[in-house]
Image (tube, rainbow over all chains, first blue to last red; front, side, top):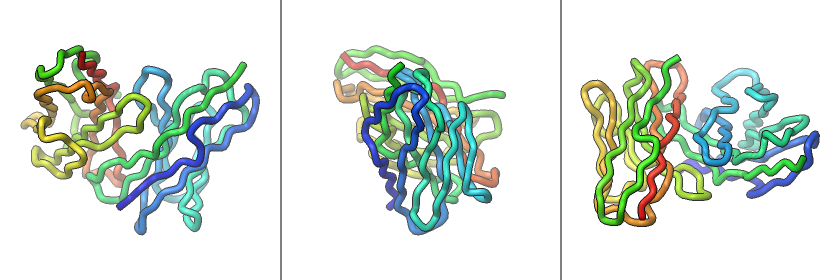
Length: 114
Length: 114
């Protein structure tokens, strides 16, 4: 069965600090990878996605992620965080099967201090 | 672009009551998924439908049932509500004819059971 783990439960950063959130998945086959953000009290919003090709993926709001197949990892990065990035971040995976469910990681809560 | 529509957005019910959540997928999408996100938790897959047939089942309580109709919209029926059913319920849709398995999430229905 697939599973997703995220390295940190809660991260606290000052504004302008760099961010890296770790994500590892467990699955023997080919996967699609996603990062979602959820602002307090709001719905899921897709930050970026990886299906194939260039393992360095750029998303919205200055976020990027790198897929490292040998490490089963898909870490999220941002060079300089803002207070408005305070949110919950979920790494997620699906298989290539056309109607397979999304498996979410447990989430990382990011707090950015002004 | 059209998005996934969920109704109602907020719902308050008493214990032991019933609730019906509705989901309208993006036009042309043939697969619908339901997820439950409890407070402080990651979204958990409940059930999915492809072409009006159940395609996968996750940790959905027996008190819950769902179906997909001929116009592809889906309804999640919840009976004998319990306090623990209070959660954000997401619907997502996808199109099996697309190259990659990508699901598009709706804004969610926030259910509060008193």
